[in-house]
Image 1: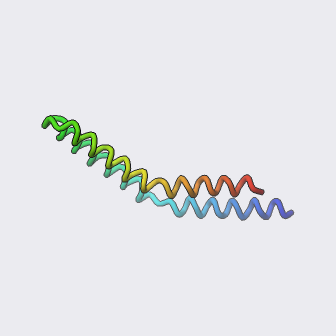
Image 2: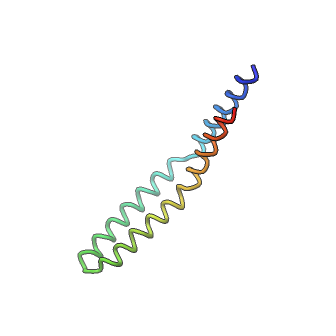
Image 3: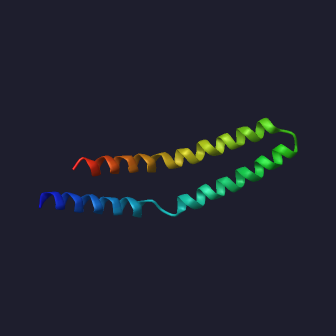
Length: 84
């Protein structure tokens, strides 16, 4: 009985995590990707390949800084799930 209760609580927590992750982050990542692609192409055609590389690196770091908390929550939830 206690095992089922713990599994029920973990499932509720996982649903809360899914609800917490909003669709906004997907749109933000898409917007940054489109902007970085356009800027990268403009800089490459003007002969500034180094700047284009730095812009794409900055975009990657920005997106990773948004995603890392969600990855941490995922690993924490998996750890909690197997700690039954």
